[in-house]
Image (cartoon, rainbow, N blue to C red):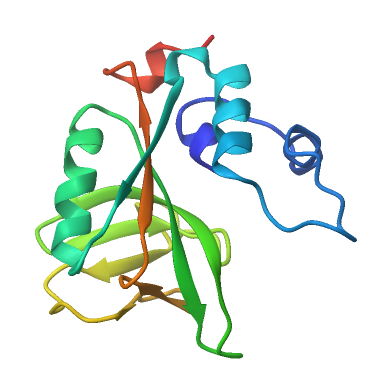
Length: 164
């Protein structure tokens, strides 16, 4: 998803090969594996993960704003809690825009975005500080008691003009 927003397109099968997905034993991709795939397919986006301890959704908006202003979508991993069944796990999503108190997301567990929309889920950044933050349009809530990681490309500027 994040690579596609940066102009690198692949089939579902290709993406599974990039991450060596084996359905019977898949436990998700590590931060190192994600960074490696990014480095191979979008060299201008080589970077690393920055970890944050956030207390409120507004802090997530502030953290993401600088990357968005540089033209990069914001790749995030966090501990999330599914609503049904109540299961906690690490989850990745992409912040695509911030408009006032609305943080727009692309969530791989969500429905495809409506034509012309900036995402398929969103967070109200004006929500008060609390452990579980509601995510509208997604089947999960964001757990702000845990570390949130944001991928930071070392290069700045429009990612579409930097494809390798």
